[in-house]
Length: 516
Image (cartoon, rainbow, N blue to C red):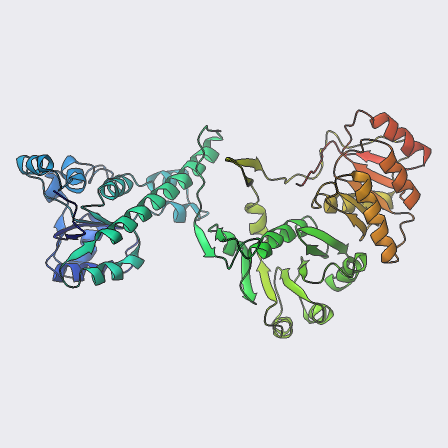
């Protein structure tokens, strides 16, 4: 028997946790003389709304047991959804065992993810919200999509009813699409549970499921010819867009980078970001003064970049930056009058950031490579307490130590090879992403000269060790008096000797911060 392009719906099994729209949908099915079977709370709701409904127990001839854990896991249910009605043998077996076909399955799953989002949820709560029967039925019915339609999304109810409007049929095309949606949902659902259980028992596994939920389609990717999509249910829990045009792929990458830089600092701080690198960072008693310090590092590159502040943007700050072209301004909040002014530029994105939520969501990083994916823990540490030590004859002064700590925080977020010159409250020169560490240092020095910034008495941070003494000697010529770097080179003694000869205090952190 050939699979029909359409299949008449005579029976439906409905069991939903999310009851959005289910009463109206079920009523329309009943009006079309579809026999409805249901379970537990769904059946109760339909009966309360005077919709004819039968218990699944009438299919199984067995009651729901174990607090509802076992109700649909039964051959009569699964055979009704798995029967290939194009095979005479299947039809004969259904008649022999008195099994009826289930033509439409409407199921959505226990709210595991929503339960996980509640701080008060216990481990027992999580376990009880792992759905067993729902995914089993969905996977079975979706496998048999040629004869059984599956619905997991309330948004599809209207489309189902539209197709059934004339002859109670659902097209093969739609049944196929609905089946694809089922497997996407169950894969995502299982991956969320898998992640929770891995973290609960702190166990690494050979298989790893990525639970990704689409947040939005983007206009394009890194370049206009590339398609792109944002996945991640938490993104808009962290970043709330208050104004401006839609975020682009590159905006989102820069936004994430800016947020991770700014949370390194407790003092009022402003960071100016371009292509994920800081153009300048400043700290002060207020964010207006911090901005001026950051902008003084490089007053060209920040145009069209991201301005990140870790304090509420007030009118004074808004007036200071309003005349400068920026793609995005991010802050923990904006005053009403600051918003009113900054919104005068219709394309400028204004993003309110939940800083605590940022920290909670910096856990794991993924990168795609040809033929696979890389995964690593996020770089959340700053210094290694065990490896942190002064290795030169001269100890850093208090002012130098403040500058070194500041420089190290900035350097952590600069693309490798990274060299950062600073005072104790502002960046003075940044060299990023060069193939040679010496080149990064020279670029940083040249930029500081262009900005008429004096590097005499400055400090320097390097994201990885100096492989030779030449980099340190270049820094000494520029006026550096103290350096912070990971150490670990086979030529460390040579570099330390050069530091002593140039009266430079130097700290080894015992921890590097490569950023590729």
